[in-house]
Each structure stands twice: as structure tokens, then as C-alpha cells.
Image (cartoon, rainbow, N blue to C red):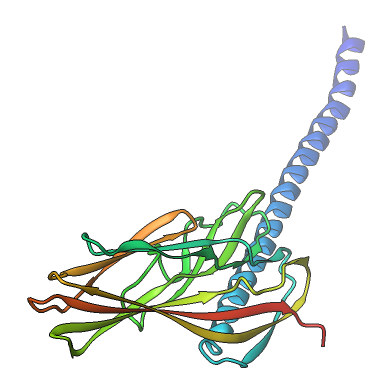
Length: 270
């Protein structure tokens, strides 16, 4: 019995050390795993912040050349771990008008392009957030922000999407043929002249204001028009603004201008 007790004690010592060793290995592994996850998460957060800042700065650069034919700017995207996608055939825009009577129809229907930056994976991405602008597909103030900079899902990952929405201004200019005249202008920023780009890494790009075109449509009514409704369907999302129309008992004249600013984005090779 004494020999058995000595044998049991002798066996208990290495078993205790073995249990302590296994416990230390498990604790070390768990600590290492969470440390790596925290470092990885922190790195992703820094890259996402850098990508946001790049897209904000790029949108500000384009803002400086809008409606200035021949003006251009260059911008270099940093390597934030994502892919820059310039998509001239994306982001469809349809504009329709109606006064509730005889004036009705589609006045614009084409893609206006977008720029998207794919983001690295992160659990802290706030999908649906607007870094600039808001969800409205059209605004009715000439001083409103035309830029939409949004974090959204794409087919494969989250991305920051840069788009432009139309904005409307209007003014009453006088009387013609005993009818009040209202001039309405719709401003459109169009990126569909851009070169298609889909690249990773540090990337310099150039944006150029090719031209600014104005298309004029005129409508004369023999009845009293109260409002002209302009409906914008931007990338399958619908919004509208109601423009008040000045009129006399003889009717109204509406001069509708579509002002289109064409911006070309391309890779800068110089």
C-alpha cells in the first residue's frame, strides 16, 4: 500500500504540470487569436477611413470643375485595399414631366455613370450611410448638393458609391402673348463619357469637364397651369419635385431647359 501511495504521488506531479501546460497553451492561443482579430479589425477600419476620405476629396475635386468646359483636375487614390471602379454605363436616369393635363412625357433617359470603391471586409461598415448628400433622387434648389456619396452593397462587397442627381431651378420672367412665362432649368451631371476602370492599388485619375449642353423645350397652354411635376427615376429609385407655374387666365408659357454637364474620368498616365 505504501508503495502504491508513493507511485500515485509520483504520477500526480507530471499530470499537474501537463494540465498547467495545456491550459497555458489554450490561453495563449485564445489571446493570440483575439489579438490578431483586433489588429486586423483596426487595420480594416483605417483602410475604410482612408477610402472614405479619398472619395470625399475626389468628389470635391470634381465639384471644382463642374460647368467649366475644358477644366480638369487630377487625383491620386491611395491603396486602401479595395478596387476602384469607374462605371460609365451604370446609374440610369429617367426624367418625366407632367402638368396633370396635356403636358406629359419623358425628357431624359440614359445612364449617367458612377464611381465606386470596393471596401475591405469589416463588421463595422455602416451600410446605407450617406457621406455626402441624401436619398432624394432630385432636388428643387439650385444651391442644393447634387452629389450622392453613399456606402452600399454591391454584388460582392460593400462599396462607396459616387453619383450625381439632377437639381431644378425656376423663375418667372414676364408676360408673352398675355401669358405668364416661367423658365425651368434641370441641371444634370453626366459621367457616361468616362473610361471604364476596374483596378486595385494606388491609382491616379483625371477628370475633365468636356462640355456643358443646354436643350430647350417650350410649352404653351390655353388653360391655367398650377404646377409642373418633374419625376426623377435614378437607379430605379423614384422622387419628384413640383414647380409652381405662374399663369394668367389665358394660360401659361413654360420654357424647360435641360442643362447637362459632361464629365470624363480616365486613368492618368502622366
